[in-house]
Every structure is written in C-alpha cells, then in structure tokens.
Length: 159
Image (cartoon, rainbow, N blue to C red; front, side):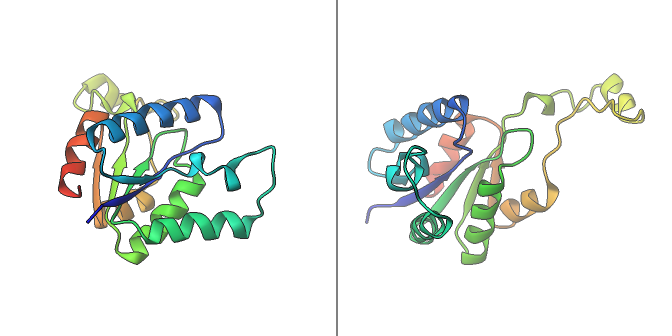
C-alpha cells in the first residue's frame, strides 16, 4: 500500500516557497513511493492570481490531510504559521501522527551560562520561542526534530 503524507508549511513568500521546494525534493528523492500532498503545488487553490474562496481551500487541504497516514509540519518562522497550526490541530484531532521540523538556530547554547543569565533581563532572551500549546499537540501525537536529516530519518517510521 502506498503511504501518503501531508506537508504543512508556510507558503506565501518566495523564501518559503523555495525552502519548501528544496525540502520536498529531498523527501521525494529519499522516499519516491511516498504520495506527498504539498499545498503550494495545488494551483486550483494556491494560484494567487486566480480565485479560491476559504471553503474551497479548507475543503481541499483538509480532505487531503485526513486521507494521509502522517503529517510533516514545518514549525520555523517568527511564530508557527497560523495555517500550519490549524492543520496540526486537525491532524491531532484525527489521530494522524505529526513530525514537526523546528530548525531555529537560537536553540543552540542551552547550557551557555551567559545566555542563561541573560534570560533574567527583560527582552534579552537569546533563545527562540515557539508556541507551547502547539508544540504539546505535536509531541502528544508525534515528535519534533531539529534538522532535515533527523526529519528524513524519522520518516522511516511511517514510510
């Protein structure tokens, strides 16, 4: 049986689109038999020169998510993309396992005393912040990894 996965990631800037293309290519190269649904590739709802209303977008993406065996969710950004967070909630409620990818380099140095001391000063945290509710949802039904290599390795469990 062919496995199917849903790829959730921000997709509105050139930078996000290019990163998604890069990551999706790596996934498809390593897992060529995986059916990977990538919302940005769905021009009937994501061609921003055309028109798709909110119900069309929600229905197509949700139907694809609910027919997937697992989800890959890119958590990077200033905050978790609101669409990605919504898709995480749908996957969680449906019992679909989630692999979160969080590569923010500010996670490094967790034992550095100067960085730890800086937390005591207002607005001087050297660490990234990610919404703990959304993180808890992902961890309750999956795992968060901190590199593309770890993501690809974790996907072995589902492919």
